[in-house]
Every structure is written in C-alpha cells, then in structure tokens.
Image (tube, rainbow, N blue to C red; front, side):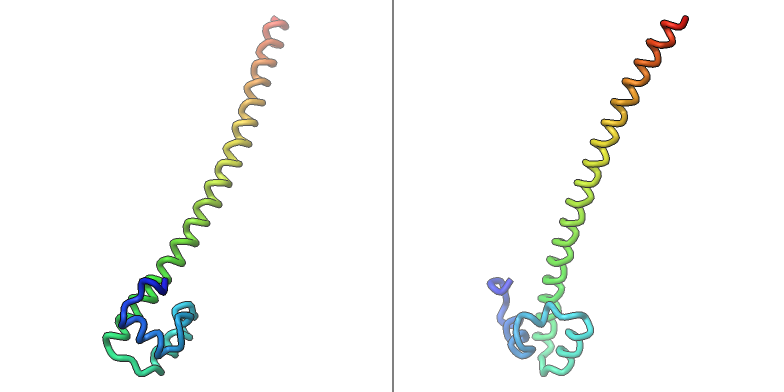
Length: 102
C-alpha cells in the first residue's frame, strides 16, 4: 500500500507516527488523529487512506469467508450425492424384491 500513497497521505502518516496507524482500532485511531496537528487536507487524505485500507481488509476477509463457504457447500453436496446414490440403489433393490413377491 505504501507505493500508492499521495503526498498528503504521507505527510499525515508521518505526523501520526507511521503507516501502522491505519491498522489501529477505531478508538485508538481517532485519539491519535485528534491529538495530531493535521491540516484539513491531511485529515481528508488520512480518512481516504484508512477507508482504502479497511476496504481491502474487509474484502480479503470476505473472500476467505466465501471460499470457506463454497468448500463447505461442495462437501455437503458430495455427501448428499452419495446419500442420493445409496437411496436410489435401495429403491431399485426394493423394487426388485416387490416384483419377486408378486
């Protein structure tokens, strides 16, 4: 992320003590931001940077969650297909039994 920072974002980050500031909890971030002497442009740049970072973080978590969900659904589908196959075989076997009894 550091390679794509604007000058304003870099200034704001320097005043707050480094890039790690965007990873802080909302309360810690707000207290650091409020105690720093930032211009309006620096505040806006920092706001955009934090939103961009959080958006990327949430997107990554969402992708992991989606992959996990898909894997679970695939396992469930495989188990249900196996169960369906067994039930169909049971139906065929029972149908043959009924025919022999008649």
